[in-house]
Amino acid sequence: MTNTTRTRTRRDFLALSAAALAGAGIAGCSTLGIGGDSSTASGPAKAPKPINKARTLVAYFSMPETDEPDGMTEDEANSTHVVDGKVLGNTQYVAQIIGQRTGSELFRVETAEKLPRNHGALEDLALEWQEADERPKLKSKIRNFTDYDTIFIGYPIWWYAMPMPVHTFLEEHDFKGKTVILFTTHGGNGLSGTVETVTEKLSDATVVSNGFTISRDDMDDTEGQVREWLRSVG
Image: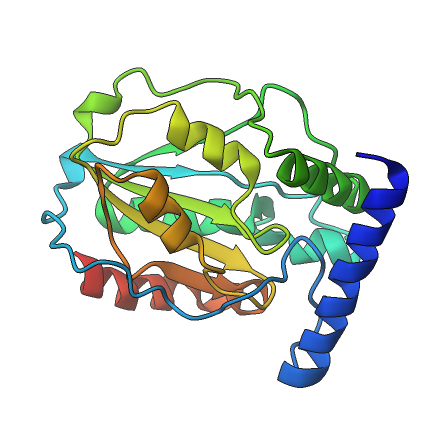
């Protein structure tokens, strides 16, 4: 991909973002957190298995743009939530709440390559991955994956879509017969069609259509929203 192509793509994307802001009144959305359809996907009607916390995993990809709780830039603040002075990524925070309420184990999906904390550099890398349909190499995989029946999978929405490292994670594990429940954090775009994406990719699994999604502007309400949502999927 040439620099000219990338510049044009980013310009087109930002134009779409501006139109969305004007039409929907969404404030403070960045390119790593704005996207398309904000509705919950209907998906095929499948009956998920009851959640057994002993056989449940919460896997998540999260990319906080700083570890420092003080003096954050706007972009850094948008990607993080501070709890008792500790900086967590938005998706990381949601994953921890789900894990606490379900008694599940947690697994963080991480790339083998250290990712940039600078917002612009991270934004560019995410776009390069997406346009190249790249599968970034991961730091590790789950060796006892067969031990789990239900897997919650969480990620931020980047460039209208699921981050490419999550594609790698899904393709490196065998989800046959498992129940998959998705959750996202975003800057104005909800699930952004990713339930359909995962349902198509994991055709041998039961992907629950009622995924959880929360705006970065509502992170203070995470516990209550997760509690209500879990009642509908558990």
